[in-house]
Image (cartoon, rainbow, N blue to C red):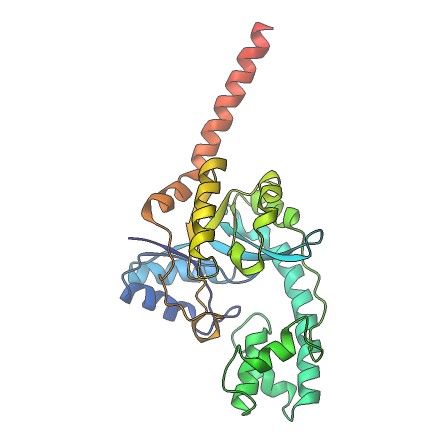
Length: 295
């Protein structure tokens, strides 16, 4: 069965809890998922425990936010199957602190512009490790100022080109830092939804930084982009993954769990990737040793 390797829960900016997500997967016939909450690894252990109860394999994962200063673009890198996920806590904590500061500024601006309180906004982030734009929009919906999350009001408040935006600067790690941290934790670094932030021109640069794979099947990639990414991954011998980027009602696109997934062939390659790399490394070391002996 195909695997949905990009899912979010209430711990970050999803609208459903961990167990609810796993039940949906079970009822949908999806036997493997990855909980990829933004800069938060808190759901991994709980997810694996609950997953066993429902017969759903939950892979250790986290979606790290980063920024390409040279390109001026956001870049999200997903860590899969880290041997020591605790080593990612530091980079997650730094981003979380920066996001909290920005969230507080945006919340205060909204509370000053609309007749709602900060406490009312915060109540919509209950269960989350942070305050996200979706939480602010949900509060404004409940207050009657809009009937949709990602409509005109969202763009007025959160689009950089909007004169009335309430955006607050947030410092994110560099792409190199994110990839290095993932590898330092024994994980696999995969570029998430390149179509969302138009990361295509920078992919070669990220490969040089050590990128292991690309999220090829995503609701943010067009069919043409998906075909281009498949060809690129084959040429560069990169892993290919897929995921719905499921957020429940907090998603930018209407998607169901498993609507974009990783085919079994590529799930198997992901699962065996680290062992394959270790074998290749040992082979290279043996060949290097033989070369030294003959010189």
